[in-house]
Length: 66
Image (cartoon, rainbow, N blue to C red):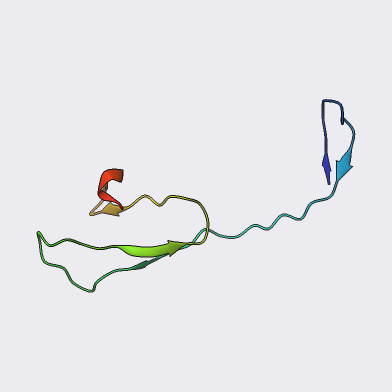
């Protein structure tokens, strides 16, 4: 149950359904790459708008991620 705490509708209440899901990301990566070769990382996330990408513990700047 959700109850309005202030304002003209203070005290009004309603019930809401909330769905909670575990975050998940699935990447599609090549099995091997050559040093200096362009690495395409594709995938999907089940929630959110952005995913931070780290390669060898180094965060990739957003301008590198398209």
